[in-house]
Length: 425
Image 1 (tube, rainbow, N blue to C red):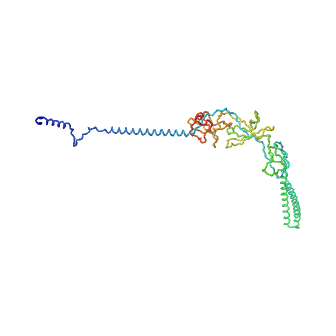
Image 2 (cartoon, one colour):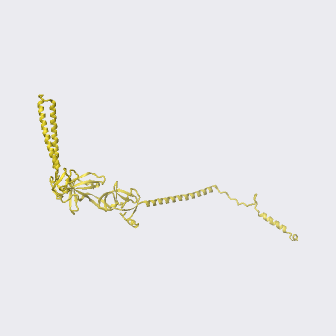
Image 3 (tube, rainbow, N blue to C red):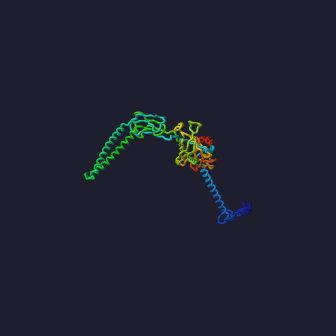
C-alpha cells in the first residue's frame, strides 16, 4: 500500500544524495581538508627582521652593561668618600706684619769653672762661702797633706845623696884624665870614671825633678781662685777627706762682670745678623726695662736638627743686676713680612721638617713645609709657607700624605654629628 501511496519517494532520496555530493570538496588521495595556500616570505624582509631582533638584543645588553658600570662607579666613589678621613679645614688667621721677632735666650756666666783638689789630704780651713766676690789668686782653702810633706823631705835627702855621689865621681874623673896623659893610669879606668861621673850627674837631675814635682803637690795644699768672680757653690767643710782629681768638687766659681746670652735663630733670619750690632734683651724681673746686648759671635753653621743658628750676645753686668742661669727674651729686628696664625695642633713634625696640611678645592690634601715664628703654646706664627686662601687642616691625622683625598667639614658639622670640634681628638 505504501508503494502505491508514495510514488515520488525514490526520486526525493536521489535528490538529497546529489546535494551531498555537490557539497564535497575534491581532494587527492585522502579525505582531510587543506589550509588555504600562502605566499612565500621575501629574503630581504627576513634579513631585516633578523637585524632588528639582533639590534634589540644588543641595545638591551649595552644598557645592562652601562648600568652595571654606572653602579660600580657610584659604589667606588661612595667607598672612596667613605674611606677619606674627615678633617676640619679652616683658613688661617692673618697675623700682623712683623718687623721684629722675639726668641728665648739662656744666660750664662762669661767664665764658669769647678775647682778640684790636686793633692789628697784633710781640709783644715776654708775662707769663702757662696756669694763671696773674690779676686784672682785669693786663698780659698787649705788642705793638710802629711804624706806628701814626708815624700818631699825624702826626695830632698835623695837629692843630697845624688849630688854628693856626682861630686865625688866628677873629682875621680878629673883626676884620671890628668894621669892618663902620663900613662900613670890605664885608658880603660879613665873611661870608667868618666862614665860614672856622667851617670851620677843624670841621677842628680832626676832627683831634682822629683823634688820639684813634690813641691808642686805641696803647693796644691793651698787652693787659690783662678779668676775674679763669685763663689756659687761650696761642697766641702773642715775635717773632710779630700781626694785628688775630679771625683769631688771643692768650689764652683763664675765670672759675672760680663754675661753670655745664647739664642737659636731660625734659618730664615740668619742673613740679618751682623757682628757688633746692638740687640735689646728683656728680663721678667725687670719689667719695662731693656738691656743692650752685643752680638759677638755665631756658630757659623746651621743645626741640621732644628735648622737654627746658635748666636752669642754679651751683656755688661758690672753692676751685678743680672744673674746667670736666668731666662731672657731677645728682640731681633727683621724685614717686614705677612704672617699667619694657626693652632699648634695643625703643625706636623716629621723628619722632612716642620709641615702643615692644607686642602684644595678638589678635596685633595697637600703637605707644605713652613717656617715657624713666635709660638705661645696655643697658637703658632707661620712666617713662610702659607698664602692667602689656603685651608689649613686643624688636627691632621698621622697618616696624612701628599695627594690624599680627604673629607673636609666645618666645626659645626662635626659638633652636630657628635664629634669634637676643631682641635678635638
